[in-house]
Length: 140
Image (tube, rainbow, N blue to C red; front, top):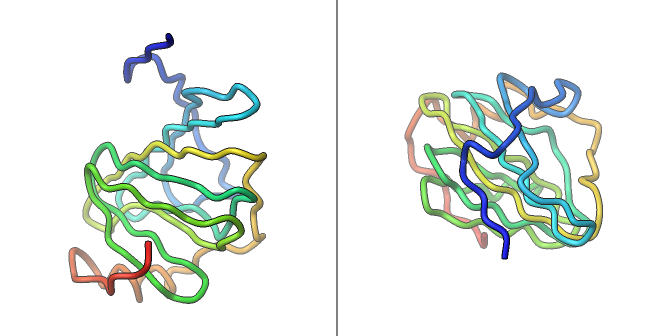
Protein backbone atom coordinates (compact mmCIF):
# COMPACT_ATOMS: atom_id res chain seq x y z
CA UNK A 1 0.00 0.00 0.00
CA UNK A 2 1.16 3.52 -0.76
CA UNK A 3 -0.11 6.70 0.87
CA UNK A 4 0.41 10.36 0.02
CA UNK A 5 -0.42 13.62 1.73
CA UNK A 6 -0.77 16.99 -0.06
CA UNK A 7 2.55 18.14 1.38
CA UNK A 8 4.30 15.21 -0.30
CA UNK A 9 3.98 16.80 -3.77
CA UNK A 10 7.20 18.42 -5.00
CA UNK A 11 5.68 21.47 -6.73
CA UNK A 12 7.48 23.20 -9.60
CA UNK A 13 6.58 25.78 -12.24
CA UNK A 14 4.77 24.29 -15.20
CA UNK A 15 6.59 24.92 -18.49
CA UNK A 16 5.38 28.13 -20.17
CA UNK A 17 5.63 26.41 -23.55
CA UNK A 18 2.54 24.32 -22.59
CA UNK A 19 0.65 26.59 -20.18
CA UNK A 20 -0.66 30.16 -19.98
CA UNK A 21 -0.55 31.96 -16.63
CA UNK A 22 0.79 30.84 -13.28
CA UNK A 23 0.64 27.05 -12.98
CA UNK A 24 2.41 24.71 -10.58
CA UNK A 25 2.56 20.96 -10.94
CA UNK A 26 4.06 18.00 -9.17
CA UNK A 27 4.13 14.28 -9.73
CA UNK A 28 2.16 12.16 -7.31
CA UNK A 29 2.82 8.83 -9.01
CA UNK A 30 4.43 7.65 -12.21
CA UNK A 31 5.19 3.95 -12.26
CA UNK A 32 5.31 3.60 -16.03
CA UNK A 33 1.68 2.51 -16.15
CA UNK A 34 -0.28 5.07 -14.15
CA UNK A 35 0.71 8.74 -14.12
CA UNK A 36 -0.92 10.99 -11.50
CA UNK A 37 0.03 14.65 -11.59
CA UNK A 38 -1.20 17.40 -9.27
CA UNK A 39 -1.74 20.66 -11.17
CA UNK A 40 -2.57 24.01 -9.55
CA UNK A 41 -3.81 26.91 -11.70
CA UNK A 42 -4.04 30.54 -10.57
CA UNK A 43 -7.18 32.40 -11.78
CA UNK A 44 -7.24 32.54 -15.59
CA UNK A 45 -4.35 30.08 -16.04
CA UNK A 46 -4.79 27.15 -18.40
CA UNK A 47 -3.15 24.38 -20.40
CA UNK A 48 -2.51 24.55 -24.12
CA UNK A 49 -4.52 22.37 -26.50
CA UNK A 50 -3.47 18.73 -26.07
CA UNK A 51 -4.64 15.12 -25.98
CA UNK A 52 -3.76 11.84 -24.31
CA UNK A 53 -3.28 8.59 -26.27
CA UNK A 54 -5.32 6.57 -23.74
CA UNK A 55 -7.47 9.40 -22.36
CA UNK A 56 -7.38 11.34 -19.11
CA UNK A 57 -9.38 11.60 -15.91
CA UNK A 58 -9.28 14.85 -13.93
CA UNK A 59 -10.36 15.02 -10.29
CA UNK A 60 -10.84 18.60 -9.06
CA UNK A 61 -9.54 18.92 -5.50
CA UNK A 62 -10.02 22.65 -5.04
CA UNK A 63 -11.53 25.69 -6.74
CA UNK A 64 -13.32 26.03 -10.07
CA UNK A 65 -12.34 25.83 -13.70
CA UNK A 66 -13.21 24.95 -17.25
CA UNK A 67 -12.63 22.12 -19.70
CA UNK A 68 -13.26 22.47 -23.43
CA UNK A 69 -12.75 20.10 -26.35
CA UNK A 70 -11.80 21.02 -29.91
CA UNK A 71 -15.42 20.64 -31.04
CA UNK A 72 -16.38 23.47 -28.68
CA UNK A 73 -18.14 21.45 -25.97
CA UNK A 74 -17.28 22.98 -22.59
CA UNK A 75 -18.12 22.39 -18.96
CA UNK A 76 -17.50 24.35 -15.77
CA UNK A 77 -15.89 22.19 -13.10
CA UNK A 78 -15.46 22.59 -9.35
CA UNK A 79 -14.27 20.80 -6.23
CA UNK A 80 -15.20 17.12 -6.28
CA UNK A 81 -15.94 16.92 -10.01
CA UNK A 82 -14.50 14.23 -12.24
CA UNK A 83 -13.89 14.76 -15.97
CA UNK A 84 -13.05 12.07 -18.52
CA UNK A 85 -11.43 13.03 -21.83
CA UNK A 86 -11.53 9.96 -24.10
CA UNK A 87 -8.43 8.73 -25.93
CA UNK A 88 -7.24 11.22 -28.52
CA UNK A 89 -9.77 13.95 -27.67
CA UNK A 90 -8.09 17.34 -28.14
CA UNK A 91 -8.93 19.61 -25.19
CA UNK A 92 -7.67 22.15 -22.66
CA UNK A 93 -8.42 22.83 -18.99
CA UNK A 94 -7.73 25.57 -16.49
CA UNK A 95 -9.06 27.88 -13.80
CA UNK A 96 -11.94 30.32 -14.06
CA UNK A 97 -10.99 34.02 -14.23
CA UNK A 98 -12.08 34.56 -10.62
CA UNK A 99 -10.98 31.29 -8.97
CA UNK A 100 -7.86 29.20 -8.63
CA UNK A 101 -8.27 25.50 -9.39
CA UNK A 102 -6.28 22.39 -8.50
CA UNK A 103 -6.83 18.97 -10.01
CA UNK A 104 -5.25 15.56 -10.10
CA UNK A 105 -4.61 14.35 -13.66
CA UNK A 106 -4.73 10.57 -14.14
CA UNK A 107 -3.35 9.15 -17.38
CA UNK A 108 -2.02 5.88 -18.73
CA UNK A 109 -0.32 5.02 -21.98
CA UNK A 110 2.39 7.58 -22.31
CA UNK A 111 3.03 11.26 -22.40
CA UNK A 112 0.67 14.12 -23.16
CA UNK A 113 0.63 15.03 -26.84
CA UNK A 114 0.75 18.82 -27.14
CA UNK A 115 -0.94 20.25 -30.22
CA UNK A 116 1.50 23.19 -30.48
CA UNK A 117 -1.25 25.76 -30.02
CA UNK A 118 -2.07 28.03 -27.09
CA UNK A 119 -5.65 28.65 -25.98
CA UNK A 120 -6.02 32.26 -27.06
CA UNK A 121 -7.45 34.91 -24.76
CA UNK A 122 -10.40 35.14 -27.17
CA UNK A 123 -11.04 31.36 -27.02
CA UNK A 124 -10.73 31.39 -23.24
CA UNK A 125 -12.94 34.46 -22.84
CA UNK A 126 -15.67 33.04 -25.05
CA UNK A 127 -16.00 30.06 -22.70
CA UNK A 128 -15.16 31.79 -19.40
CA UNK A 129 -17.60 34.63 -20.04
CA UNK A 130 -15.74 36.83 -17.59
CA UNK A 131 -16.58 34.82 -14.50
CA UNK A 132 -19.01 32.29 -13.11
CA UNK A 133 -21.45 32.40 -16.01
CA UNK A 134 -23.12 29.14 -17.02
CA UNK A 135 -21.27 26.99 -19.52
CA UNK A 136 -23.08 24.63 -21.85
CA UNK A 137 -23.06 21.07 -20.52
CA UNK A 138 -21.23 18.62 -22.70
CA UNK A 139 -20.80 14.89 -22.87
CA UNK A 140 -17.95 14.93 -20.34
